Image (tube, rainbow, N blue to C red; front, side, top):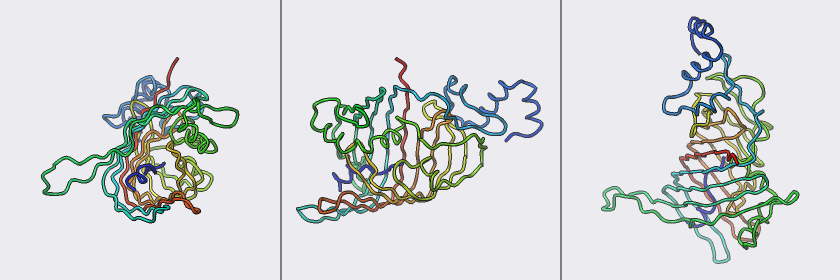
Length: 323
């Protein structure tokens, strides 16, 4: 989970027994279908073909990790962040503190074909809040970063390099290569190495994620403790998921983004929800109210620190490419 893009801060600074018996009489297939209809929230129905792959019984659901992970993928991510906070920036030109209040919208697309990955920024804007009583009724939007051409990376041995002679991508690849695998997992281009075991989980079951199990939710070098509770089964863009409520806190060091930034963050999740795929070890949607402290740079060079409270929504349209 990552909520505030560093480039933005830089620019802006169970059913009853009788019912189960009746269902059993209808056969296993009908049982699975009816249970799915009961537990999946209206308005978020899964794709019927994907629903067939869900492993669900009266004892609960199994979060699968046995299906072959697609070699070719396209993921479109939309991230909305309503934040209020303060940024402190230090450089050779001096120090500056700024207050930031408003809403970030970031949309980007990542694609993977085996050992080739591309990242394309579609939109990155910041909308200032509308002042009560002002003549302007619509928020004023400022472009944080312009849309970009695809930055294409290719794996050569154990390293990730630029797939072209583009100077910008070459610099990004040099910075990101040691942590590129974190980017793949964080953006659902690769499965989480740590996932659920073979125990089925029912609606209402709770678990604590900490220590070695933290990578189930948090990618990168992190510590902390998160409380999860399975609340419902829903679909994200037709993909079946388990919806967990989430709260807790974590710290993380040198977490990368495709803009080349490496960020330390301390995050308290006051409340939120997270949508985990029932078919693959990936996270497809996140919503949270958080308090964050981030740090970037330092050691004699330019540095940036920020503290903010935010409400965040992240949705990933996850599409295997069959070619």
